[in-house]
Length: 378
Image 1 (cartoon, rainbow, N blue to C red):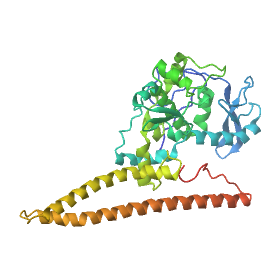
Image 2: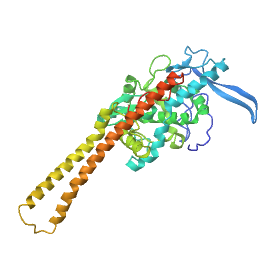
Image 3: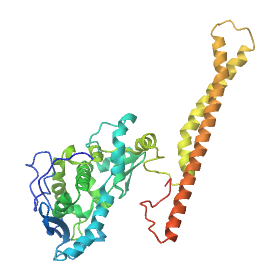
Image 4: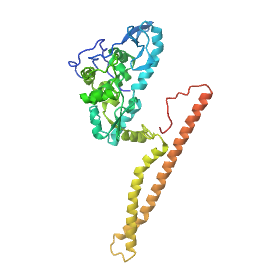
């Protein structure tokens, strides 16, 4: 894990970001949701280094919502109920890590320099309205590892969570989980370049990228601009590795996962084995078609030699190549077919073993949650 510098606590109230130098996140300059609060509770009065305390994220007593804004599945305790807060904090922590960390992608990025990935620049992000100029369909996806990842005519974008509107949430997150804190800041910094114009903001609201305020109305573009401005003051040293890059090409990430982590792909666009193998074999078929033209040309040359004596000293070399090149092509085709069938068998066996293991644990009454909601290829 990369070493991060110590940072001062965020202010409890929004601050003006224009006068803050580039560096660590200074805190929100415009708070759009004030229904949350952070309380500090003592968890050990006589610890080895003195009293120990812990921060809890709670809903204000005046708030009609008892859950994390935008996510009713994650209930928040009332400020007066500390015991309830400790019980629910684990659910909140697990949810935030699942929703914002990009650990596997962070692990792949150092290797992408070897497959001609662009120079890492977090500004390499096109405005939302400009994506259509590249014939890209915007797909809203909550997977943090797919945010600003594009694949031919589509680009995946993760929407802004509603709880990011709260200054209290950022205060809590800074002390609760530094990894999620860095990932969340980098994520919001990417939106500064994604939403650059009024047309971007309008489109973002219409497709669900920008959340509503607690009163049920969308913020104005001016309010949103004030809200997101402080995230532009953050440098690369204070965000996780993924958000030191802008848009990423999925095909290159998949190739990196295959070459350096020996996985079929980072993310499978094709959900079925047939379509997946067809996609893999398509470029190989094109190469074999070129080889077929070369072999036919060699065959014509050899037929021409049979019609008369060979006077040029270079023709014997051509004859030798014509004899061995087809053999090499046959071996290559056999190797590709073997690898394709072998890969298909491996995928099938892994899916079969995984399914049997889940059934076995289920019969024994154990947990069947292994973090996978899908099979090998999907």
